Image 1 (spheres, rainbow, N blue to C red):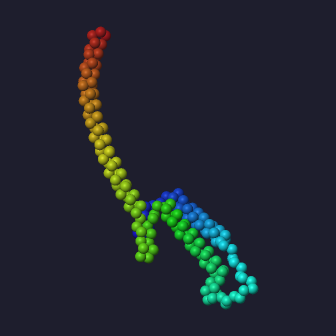
Image 2 (image 1 turned 120 degrees about the horizontal axis):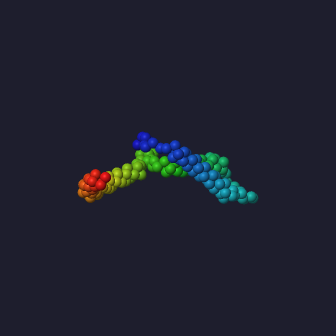
Image 3 (image 1 turned 60 degrees about the vertical axis):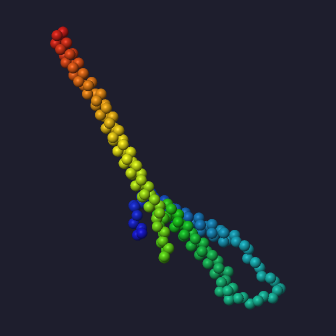
Length: 164
């Protein structure tokens, strides 16, 4: 699966590049807007006794959780961009550790191409045979006409000599 598939045109490569960045930007912007419009921060209860913050609360402050959320949004944007780029390029093979997905599209296209080539070859063979048959029929019609034309030319030449 080395990634050495068929050559890709510059236009297609450029379209894949645009798709990559467009998907990344769109996903990142939508994710950040979603994070920014999340639920409002609740204010602590004033006047009620508070318990000391737990280890979890001290370890994961609001800022750290926000950075973690932003990181997840950006990671999702990278994944979305990668998927968009592979769709545009038509290379859908994927391998991550023990998980591997073969490029089924390339195999299907190859098989379809072979079937189309076989059908085209069969149609061309039939067309050649039909064309040859019609040319023989035409030759059978033209041969007697050519003989009669030669006879007619001889008679015209003979008449010209007599009358001329």
